[in-house]
Length: 122
Image (cartoon, rainbow, N blue to C red; front, side, top):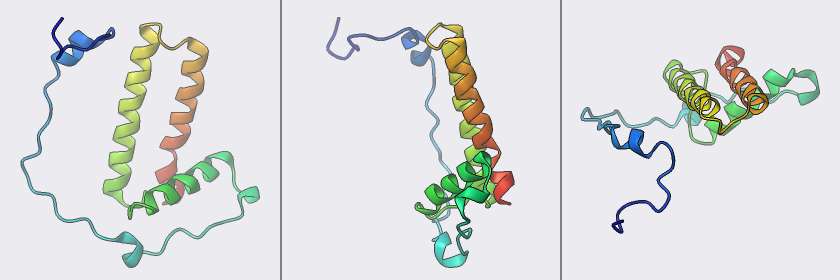
């Protein structure tokens, strides 16, 4: 084994070796400071919110800390695309036995709840 090879490559090592990294060649426009341009979603008392609404508010705060908002279509689309990718990873983990069915169902329900956030904030 060479020093460049991982000690424990794991079950997906062969798969990852076939993945071609994506390199962006187009220049992205500079990020705008959204907090200066748009007011944040007002905080509401958490006792009046459903669990999904509380999660949406928490996620919006998280994105606002990075000058982003899930009310923006581009940010919401990127967020949902990322969650779909995570779901695909979880499905693969379940198929390989890394994740049991009960854990998969719980995590998938969390992802499903997170996916409602952009719609709840709109």
